[in-house]
Image (cartoon, helix red, strand yellow):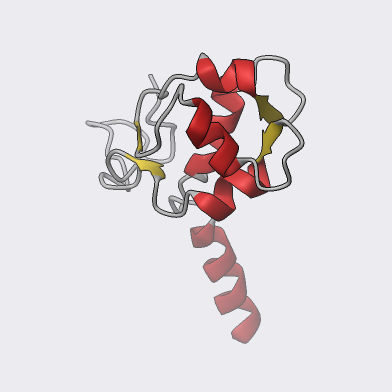
Length: 113
């Protein structure tokens, strides 16, 4: 009986909504050379991706210096996470409408059209 419960529990867990971390999403969006960090040039050209809210002074040299904790001329993901807690977040909960319902169709299909 316990094996069936575990199997059912694991199957239903696959249909949960777990939104992606917003900080790496911001980093990936603005890391144009894909080196895993933001240079001063990338920071000065940075934009807020759709669906995020950012409470940092983008395109500010002084903000770049504040975030660059090890002073290597780049902002790493770890530095961005450490200094920007609650500063980069989703503008609305990506799971707010979970589970998505499809009118008359298979409820297990992706809601992305």
